[in-house]
Image (tube, rainbow, N blue to C red; front, top):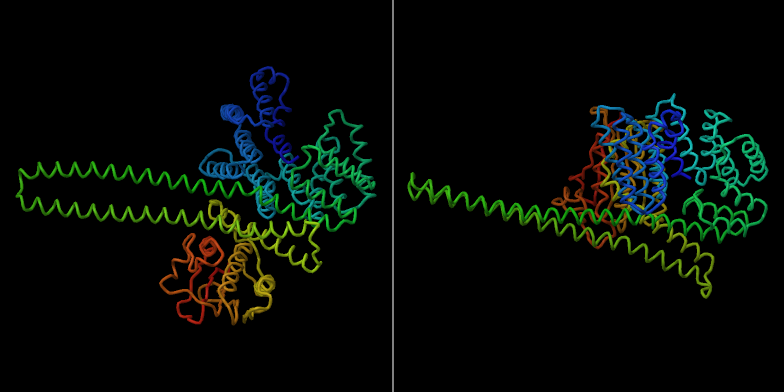
Length: 593
């Protein structure tokens, strides 16, 4: 349903508003449009890309920039739905770059809405919500049609995760819709799904009656959404097997993740908590599987870049070889005019300098190759380890021959959840490194109550610590002391620093502290541990991508580099305290405003 709604918003709507006279004029265009729309649902990529290019050229010629960017966004969505999500996201970021450099209309809201849909389709709720909110910030508040598109996506992303939030957005959608609008059905469908996920049977059937009245009163009623409501109605009537059977049928009303969400709700209605828990684990596996292509496309991109670097290196050597020949010929000519001794000295100096440059270039190429191999090895290891744990426990739990106590099952489920989160963290870290839109993401618009914020982080980390070390928060700041920055960015940095401190500290304590510096208008967050420490000569190296002090410890070596990048984007800095010698003290300095 997400895909169809997005296409309607950027293409079919234009076709619907063409007058009869314009349709006569643009018969060739309408034929092209219908062919484009049909190709979208096929795997004929070359034909689809060709039709998409023709559509883009048409809109550019007509000066319709909004539809032009809409066609480009549909191409990104097509890539995502055909197993190339990473490619689709990269194309979308390229569209944003092109908009910034353009002096024409810049419909950012269309791109942000599509980015939200792309991340939602991969299960990235926080990223999806971020981009949908960006779309709201950039849309013209008087453009009710585009507002409807964004509200629909916000309802859809929340309906199975935060059902009350979904209801708020659905009511906003209703407020700008006319009951005679064909889109009023979308509001009713979403309302029915909200009641389903809340388990409110009477309200669900009341909504079904309202939907039936709407169907009778409209002449262009479409079938989308009916399949989902039909299976939900069967579940409310206690026909669970029928509902589950309908769910297995192919339908555009939901994707694989939404199918899992519906199945979980049906199991809850049946009172089958064990089946619901197993389906939750299955959903995590699907989410991780959907994102594997992003990981390996990223790795392939690195391999391609390394290959290009090697070709450039060979070309540079060839140029230097010819340059050497030219220099020799030049010296032969100059030898007719200058003395032999001076000629020899200059020649020797040039040759020595070239040799040094070649040695440096060779060392850099070898180091680049080494870092690439280390990165690929680490990514493979870091993903394989938690996957093996998840697979092992899943086999034990699902095997009827194993009689596992409930306490042991709970521990296994907890380990599965921890390792699923670890894989998600790896993907998030890799995307963070490659995301050129980070500056847009870390806007400093959040009001942060520092003490409450830090105590919550300490509480989060205590679950990982498990009472092993003394984990404390220390400050002299007033209780309601507030700063204005980006909460998500500071949260990611402090979680990463505390995670490192716990990982590299065997005994003693880990302390988080906060101190205001009125003189320069900043606040300092310090994470201090009593662990093994970092040698002073490696204080800067640890902030490089993929560098690890201890290669036997778990991790890709991207955490600290990502933290420093975020700190800089927030106008601050991240350093190691050179005067502390009882472990490691990381110092994050952030502007108060």
